[in-house]
Image (cartoon, rainbow, N blue to C red):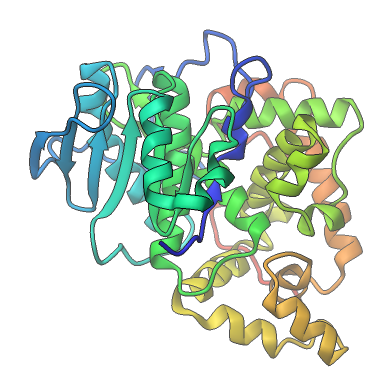
Length: 371
């Protein structure tokens, strides 16, 4: 199997540290129905029946089912049978958000394999058997899951954490299957966090997709702001989750929170100035045009440096090419955005899934940045 893996490293510390850290009991992932989506969200219609077929699956460490939906081959050994029955509609709802929340993206041509084992031991056995010597990369996770070669593999961590990881890893799976050119690492990870905004209602149906309703990421961001340990934007763009983990749990959690916020900034910050460019970037990744545009960019004058940057998934070239040639001004605007969304009182709006900006972008598409 070709390793094109993305690890849910944020899930590796979900016990004592938790990542995302545990939230108050009132911020449960099962919640009352909410009104239609607000700015920055996409409504997800309840899916009455998405199951095409269901057969027993006995390799997941407990009673399980192999469920075929329109777009997934789900292997589910989730311990709670009621929760297990809710996951097919939930994953299809997540897929709707992946394909339409920011830009119209193609659906995968073949059903995607998605595994949720009953516990860690069968998850480890599957990982060793399937990945061989490469398995150790993933078995180093304390608690969590991973996506490799378009297959997502996790295990049951309870309703809230399982939903969060499933939405997060589901984006990685979708992007590996549908984007012809990989996105920059910082955007890939930011989008996976942004897509965590799907939840279940108390009735067990997928709710409206609300990317702002992510109290875990917001709380990590607020803590980093208050403790003056934000990662400078230039450094953030050059970092990967693995590198941040090597520096410690706090850096890793801050990385995910800041990339989550960076996607929000590009979508709704600066009065919507960057929204069209964000849509173009994602569309170019889907069509395969991203690599060619970066290689031909004049944002970096030195040809050798530009070639190196265009081949890397790290760095600021995408910002310079798609969003703003004045990186210092862009960085300052991003810092101001972080201060605004973590100000006192913003948490109430985050919990309601509302845009917390003091001057939110209008619903109209933003004006592309000057080139």
